[in-house]
Length: 480
Image (tube, rainbow, N blue to C red):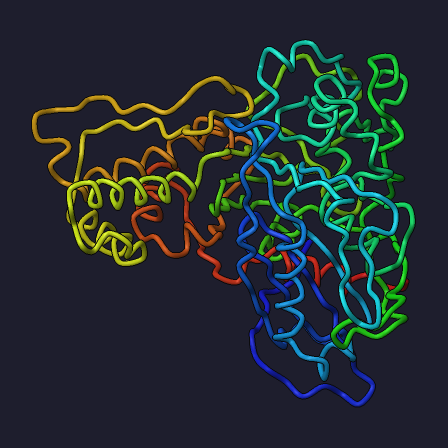
């Protein structure tokens, strides 16, 4: 569990001091944080947009793919901003990022040559990320039942690999390895031929038994799954290797920890007590509380997909997680719709997305509404085929864009509460909610609706950060 909140300030390094570096490969951006190895102080945090989304050729309607070259270019941008004078002092590196997704690559397709990043783009697949919807509910019913406490959903690594093996098996023949995009970065830093994956990310792929720490190899093999792609798995905090080649100031010998999931790292950066729940609203949304120390999930096959899942955390503990696919992305879609309408109606100022977002917040401050919005534009993992709706529309309901915006904010919060109710939180001893995430921190209307819905004290933390959590966790490791 994380200790006291981080005090953000620049500081002079002790003569024998060094940095811990956290890198977060997010859905839309990359972040990197440097903290002191000896003190809980942030030296610097930087970010860069990845702008990596690309059209899906294999699944034009439902696919969600990202360009690996653009993701790694954004990582380089972040490291460049930190600068070689600081990076040369890095002694430990923790990589985290978007869970569930899958990328395939050929040996030696990504390397550092003469301090320069080299990617053979024809020998590496796109990142098929957590939003990928190619595995329909009908397709998922054809897959074998996992021997795991977690079910399998579209966007999960094993589901994606099943889809390729069923529909285009020849595509897989060109690749040697598979993992999360974070595993690929760790392999690059350590010059590893074979990737290694943390238990957190293996569980997020599906078909992994956390009790035995093993893949469901026999089940997968019998179903024709390409088991050669399943990486070696170890616990969070295990050493994956050391930096082998200088890169933008990073020096050989820096220790690299096996890549971690962004959700556990985000929680680690802010949670202060077992009686805290954490709600994180960014692109998507998660509501999380800690399970008792002695909790162990059932090792029996999952029977159905629940709205609450138990994710591996740190130190052999678990989180109860209500994960929604619908968070800030819903409000982004609403703002994009407003701008598109303005464009179609001939408005000259239809590209100021940030300005429209700010104006909608201002209008919503004064607005009330009876509109009922179910904001599941992407469905949910336990209701994959559902889509959003608006109900209770009266004669004037759509005349006030501020009221519409508030209704969408309320719908996002109510949807999260339907996944893990306020009564459930109180029953397990939750006394406070810690609110974090970019979409929540920048939106006072979401905050109002959160407090109204859950009726618990809320502490807002702007310093919640997966990359910070990754850096803090590797800092906490006693020896490597």
